[in-house]
Amino acid sequence: MSDPIRILHFADLHIGTETYGRLDSETGLNLRVVDFLARLDEVVAYAIAHEADLVLFAGDTFRTRRPTPTYQREFARRIHVLSQAAIPTVLLAGNHDVPAMEQRASSVEIFSTLSVPHVRVAEQPALFTVDTRRGCVEVGVIPYPVRQRLLTRDQFRALRPEELDRAVSEAVVALIRDQERRRNPDLPGVLAGHFSVESAHWGSERAIMVGRDVTAPLSALLSAAWDYVALGHIHQHQNLNPENRPPVVYPGSLERVDFGEEQQPKGFCWVELERGYTTWEFIPVAARPFRTLRVDVRAEADPVAAIRQTVALHDVAGAVVRLIVQMTPEQEPLLRDGELSPLLGNAFFAQINREVDRTVRDRLAGLEPDNMTPVTLLTRYLAAHGKPEADIPAYLEEAREIFSVADENA
Image 1 (cartoon, one colour):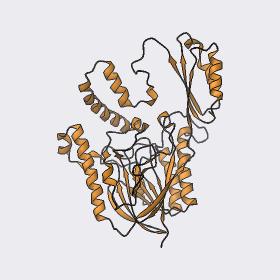
Image 2 (cartoon, one colour; image 1 turned 135 degrees about the vertical axis):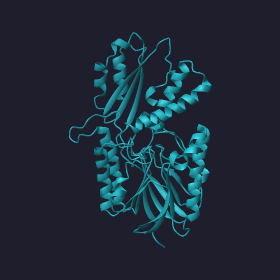
Image 3 (cartoon, helix red, strand yellow; image 1 turned 45 degrees about the vertical axis):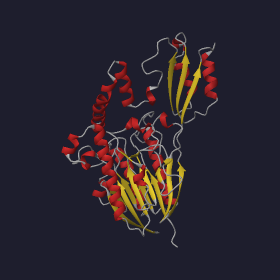
Image 4 (cartoon, helix red, strand yellow; image 1 turned 30 degrees about the vertical axis):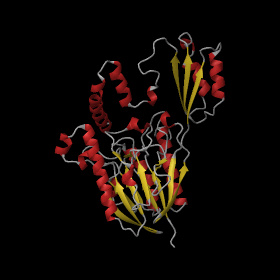
């Protein structure tokens, strides 16, 4: 009996995320970008040290569809290491990789253009065989489903938003079924996709969504044709089919994007693949910690001392820290950043949010904008300004297109 095929499955790099960072004078990069690249270094080192037979990246290489040449260079350096180690690597195109216009190149297409050894870019749905050192594996790929490429222009124009979503979902299911029919049942098989699954738990990735999302039913993935389903797009690690086979797994992102991911473990999946029997495990990486500290000083005679005591109870060294201080209006001018910031001196990055106990509440009903997506903020803005509830979906649909174009031109 042959050894199982070893696959490293990871996703959602988002190189170029600079939030909570600052410039590193040595590298010329934002230090948060350095964090994301360091996580990719962990992936590459693990693949080599554990003799991976296949590295499968399930999409979203960069933060935007137009990454800077510097970010492209840094990603290419790490893929080059895998290529030099002769490890087959599949790069799936995610929604942050695929341009809105079909004529434009994706951010990862250069690897196929240059025919980089052992690297395959998956920009179109396909089924292909990868010959590894421990045997062959059949890989089906469903890159991010771009509406304009799945539906004709006339179809696109004629459908209402909800009908369009349903039509795209049905097109994705049809692509998956087609690959099932063409599968070689004697080979172990992996289905890799970059899209949302209906039962998945969403995280803060909605805040950086490019364009409208595409959702497929879980039932479309639960086929004996596949021994493992490797997904990307959702940042929270989860197995959507824990009690049965095949495993349907989002490894999650490698680094935390914002405080919405504060409690989420970050890492990748190590898969040992066999036909009809596959095992896998989640491998954590050293993602930078995020810490939220809350302190209520409204009844404190010495509010600074109370804040100092709260900070002392937490390990903030090297963390991205959010200090939320609940205070009275009278305390607000007394608690200045110059006095509070030194208390968080060991943090990688610190922000101080003041919650002033006022009689009139703000229009966000106490919610924190940092944890709200642009769509959520706009929804609350429209409601606060008296827009009829029935009209809000139309405004949001237009806004999503604007957000997509803005990201494309960023």
